[in-house]
Length: 92
Image 1 (tube, one colour):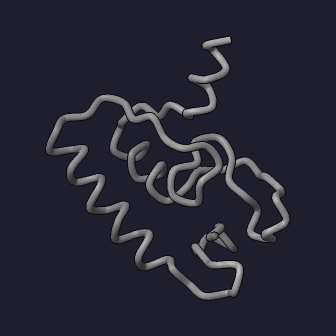
Image 2: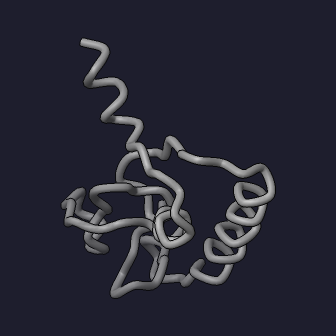
Image 3: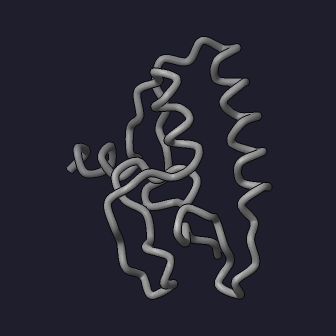
């Protein structure tokens, strides 16, 4: 399990996995740009893909407003972000 702690992706054991998350996000962004993606459906609350909210870094299941590292890269590149939870709530 990982969460954003003061902008750094950390495990519950306080080990930084930030470099790995950011490297993966950069590689995925390149693929999205190469494929000329217009929009992306991302997993809710993830430290990588959270669109509207992410966990607050306390590992206590508390949410705060914000985006994951990959979501921010996509947004900054002009790619529309769709939270997976928003899709499932519209089905009901």
